[in-house]
Length: 212
Image (cartoon, rainbow, N blue to C red; front, top):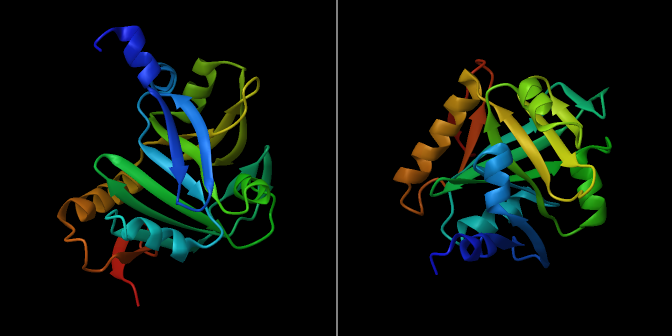
C-alpha cells in the first residue's frame, strides 16, 4: 500500500531485545525523523556485555568494538558523577548496535534501567546533531536531559511520554573516526575473524587492537 497514512502506520516498530525476554516497546519512525532526524543507533543496557555481544555475533552482526571500563566526564541531572562503564559497538547495514554495562553503583540512567529490567533491553535510540545545546533549544521544554557527557552526548526523555530515551550525539573528529572504523570493519567482516576487537583511546583518537 503506497498511501502515506498507511505507510505511517507501518512505521510503528516493535523491537525484541537480545532474545532475553524483553519486548514490546514501540516508536514511530516518521515522528522521530521529523523531530530529530534518522535513528542511527540502538542502545541496549545489559547485565553481561560478553553474552550480549555473543548474542549478536551468532546472528551475524559484528565485529564488536569494545571500550572497557571508561569513565568519561559525566553529569547526571546536572550533577557531576563518576561513571564506570564498558560499551561495545557493531553495525548491521547502516544501523549501529551498542551494548552497555555499568560496573559501579552510581545512579546512572543505565543502572536505573537495569534495576527495572534485570534482563536488559533497549534503553535509548541515538541521533546525530551538530550542537547539543542548539538542538535542545530547538526542541523545546518538553524534553529533559537526564545524563550528559560534555558537549558530545546527552540522553533525554519526553516529560509527557517517558520511555525509550533519545541520545543526542554531536559530531566530532574523535567520534566520527571511531564510527567510521567500526562501519568499515562491519563492511569487510567475514563473519568469523576477530569478532571482538578493542578500542584504545590512549593516543586521544581511537586505535583498534586485537582482543586478548
